[in-house]
Amino acid sequence: MKVEYESGDVVEYEHPELTYVVYPSEDLDGVWIGHCLETDVVSQGEGAEQALLMVMEAAGITVALDRREGRDPFDRCAPPEEWPPEKLAEWTEKRRQMRKLRVVKA
Picture: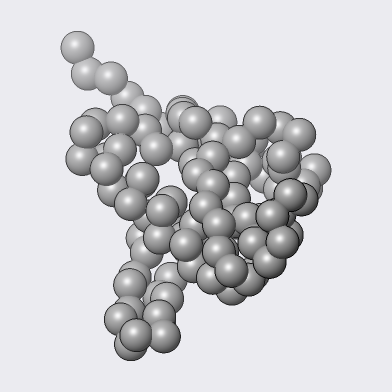
C-alpha cells in the first residue's frame, strides 16, 4: 500500500491487509482516532484522513521494528471487543494458519 502525503512524500507499507478503524474522539473536539487492529497500534489526527495516515505510519514502523528485533508484530492484536465480528473471525483464522506455518528447528 502506498500513501502519498501532502508534502509529496510517498511511503510504501508492506502489509496492505491490515485492518484500520477510524472514529472521532469522544473527549477531544476535532480529533480523530485511528486504530490498527492487527497490531493494536493507536494514533490520532485532525480529521479522519490524517488519523488514518498517522496510524498507518505507526503500524508500519511497529511491524518493521518488531521484525528487526525478532518479534512477531501480530502477537499483540487488539482485544476482541474492538473488532467488527466478521473481521475478527477472518483474523482468528488467519492467525491460526500463520501459527501452523511456524516451524522450529531443533
